[in-house]
Image 1 (cartoon, rainbow, N blue to C red):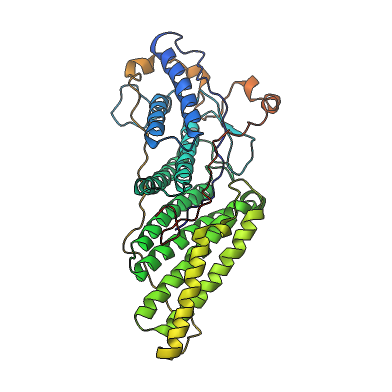
Image 2 (cartoon, rainbow, N blue to C red):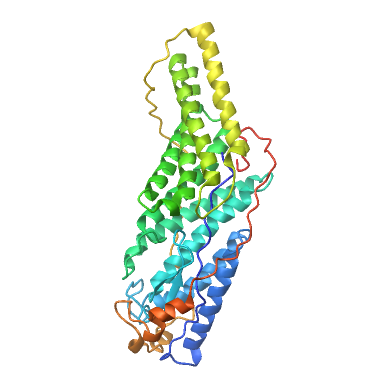
Length: 429
């Protein structure tokens, strides 16, 4: 139903060399380190472009994570499927920025920290790819499926990170991307946006108003939950993002009342239908006010005027015309009293609810074998707590000298200025 999404910037990271002073300088260990460095650079370059095709991104992702595998999980010849930590897990320092914390990076000597932050960027890429496809003038049915699939994949990535974040030996910093509140917001947002595609499709195929109302209701709740996840964070950091989530929640709450009002009218409950439509108008006006606040709010993310988009204008027209129809029919035919209380909207979507696509760490790269793993002899440089760095590199003076990381240079995501010609007013239907 909406082809406009709020998107936060990709996370920045420092160049990584995978140097192990005590590792064998020849043979497979050296090859693993060199290939991991190159695969990381290739993946970071690829995800800076939301227009890349999914298969190429997933190929880059599988290669890098396959090489990272042996730095995370022990490959000493133990039982297959072991999750014991690799002896190299805490031998490399990684630096990553976070959505709400500017360009000052957080660092950890933990390859799981690297895995989760890189996976986070991949999740963001899926959402940006969906936006890129949705921004076209008239996306095809295949592109609509790709938008839907991308958002389901993003949801799966954020779910994976949420499940794995407890493995970090250093707890996530407040307000970082690995903070459970931020993770939940991203997770709920990507799932809700996937359902927007489902709603648009249901409207286009003229499914029953009751079914559409159920989908809108569930989607509104997801956006609301995402907004609530951010409420306890610093307002100046999340203001813009939070406005987006709030306006989407109100928008779909308005749509819920509108389509449920249609359902009631079809059952000759005209008075209750009018009450629903009046409530729909209230939420639509609230969403309109939030659109204007969003446009001027401070914080990271997309700059746009959502109230000018056809999807927004279209639902406003539907709400007002449906209300006028109900009031007209009530005056001529039904003569029912309009109740003061809002009718109980006990609608739950029976179909169309989105489930995430599972994300998991791929198998180790073929270069990783029990023998190649044994060639790494790094015990002297690795801390079991994940906090033992090389003193010179971890000094406050060194950190200050290194400074902030530059923002990622991302390819832009243009949005179509052309109004769609379909029934829903949505370019992803």
